[in-house]
Length: 316
Image (spheres, rainbow, N blue to C red):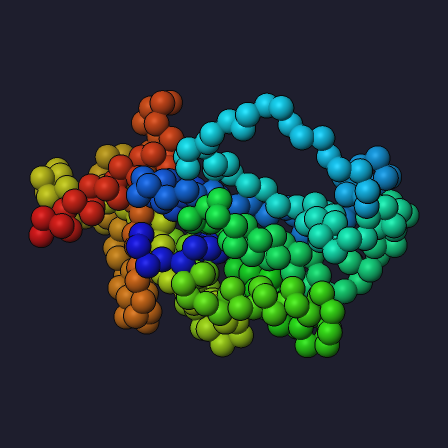
């Protein structure tokens, strides 16, 4: 994975396996020896903080913290958190903490003032989440962050919100936060986007449209399209029907199942060819796999399949 960006946003139409691909990319990074984490974003709903007891805000104090007598426990790179969840409310609290608002901020949040303001400013929650991702990206704790981004319908507004807020805020921390996030999104060595789809007409159409729209309206680079749930080719020694008959002429369930499977694969092949003819970037096909054992997760099985594919490509 050398040369790949440090932050990868994974998006796609709902139900195509976006979260599975997020975890798969994280596992691939770990297999390559990288310190990785899958980043999951909280719901884009109202910021709900009912009282000051729910807050964990730093307060200004002249008292020096007591020095710990315990020796720090050394951690290997693989001991880093593999899964990180970022919620808008937590991101807002951290943002206020970082800018020194202290106890005043806790009271404003508890009374609902900050929540109203945050809800009233379009894109502010998206910017707070992107700001936390940027903070993780700039730390030395991770080599790769794979973000389970919103579905394609919301990803566009999610990634364009910093530019709109930068234009609104002429000065101050909000403008600087927007500029810092935009710099991360525009740098291909720092961030990129992977679009997940399946080999069906509507999801392929949406994936291609997302490539165009993201290229026109955001600064982020689409690194690849992942096609999930691709059927394996039918075996050449499969006992196909001896003669061509229509479905109405046969009642054999095995025959009907074979025809259904063949037709489905033909439609998938047609869509895959259309995608490759339209999109010149990198495409990766992931096979449709059953969960054959309780001890092997879907991600582990996909990882094994990808390793086999890479070995075959090297040999050829």
